[in-house]
Every structure is written in C-alpha cells, then in structure tokens.
Image 1 (cartoon, rainbow, N blue to C red):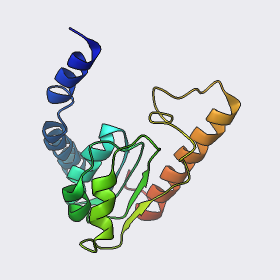
Image 2 (cartoon, one colour):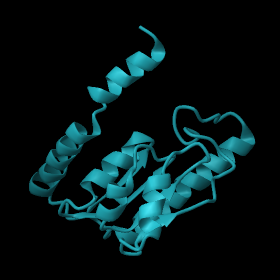
Image 3 (cartoon, rainbow, N blue to C red):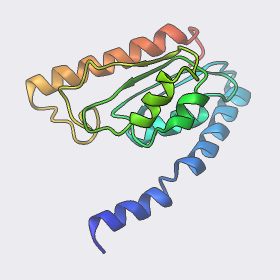
Length: 159
C-alpha cells in the first residue's frame, strides 16, 4: 500500500472531519456543563481549519483561526458565522472558499491574511523547520497572530 493510499484511508477514517466535528461538539458540551466554560475558540492546522469551520456555529464558539487551511470550500465560507482568521500559504487550495466570500453571500467577518505567502503548507506544524532562525521567526509570528486574534474574541477567565 503506497503512502497516498494510506493517507486517503486515514482521512476517511480517524481524520474524518465530519465525525471529529461531532466529537468536538461533545467536548465543548463537556466543558460547558462540567467546567462552566462559556466561550470557545479554535486554532486549526491544515484539516483542523475545516474542523473549526464545521463547529463555528455551535453555541459558545466565538472565533476560529488556523494556518495552512485545507479542505475548506464554498459552503464553509457561507456557513461561517464567527470572526475567522486564516493564514494560507501558496499551496493551500481554498479558491472556492475565497470565491464564495467575494460573491457577497457572506457576512464580512472572515479575514484571510496574506502575510505568510512566503511560507509553505505545514510551516507552523510538523513540517516546520524550527531550527532555522528565519523559519522559526515566521512560525512565531504566525502563532502570535493567531493567539492575538483569539484573545480579542474570548472573554477572560473562561478557558
């Protein structure tokens, strides 16, 4: 079995974002009921951005963010109802998502930053070259942008 086949199998099983969205909603409910949390936000990497988009309208979710987004489509763009910040790289295929935003079918709450178009898919995650000083600085800048965005939208003391 080649690497592409194994990856496709992984995406359709353990990483099935629709199934993981239901799991995520259950986790949100657990923290709301058992821990008294009122607001939630998400930082996704790659397919985690799709997962964040799928749970954005769940009660208590106030913002979603992510770097090198994958699997986002026009329907996701139309359905996002919370402040959103995506940090795509040149290889990320989100043209349908962007086209839906530009069509005017969406509230103006989505920001797509082009600040990291000098980077590559996975730079903030497992593919990042953290021992390279330039790449580390860029990854830290991306991390800081995502965290600052989240901090602006979360109420203090609820996480």
